[in-house]
Length: 130
Image (cartoon, rainbow, N blue to C red; front, side, top):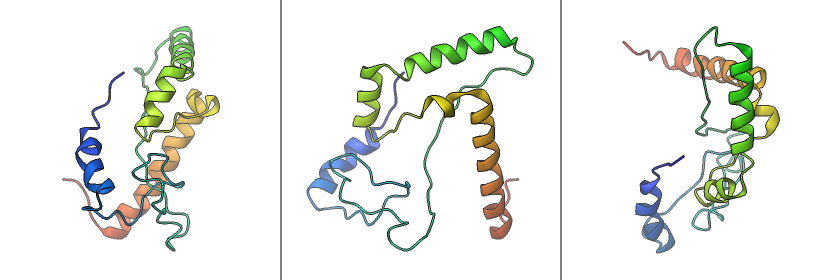
């Protein structure tokens, strides 16, 4: 698994050198990256319960046989426990999710919550994709 976070490498020297001022992060918790460790969250700044993060999911076609889904989920859970993967993700400011959140039913519930959450924002803004 590779992730291109070159944008962070591009900005890190400017942040650390004080050329770019970071006012807040959108995650629920402060970031662990040294360049952003002291930066407050928007929730800390007064936007109660504010949290916007990037997340990923692993999907399979509808009607994929249960044993196949089970095997994929087992492999995913194993990969997400790999100490080297966790170390690399944390170095990029990424938090690896818990086993419970990796379960298909829990992920489905999470995605449904995200859809409902952002649908409210989109309706309130009156903005729609064509």
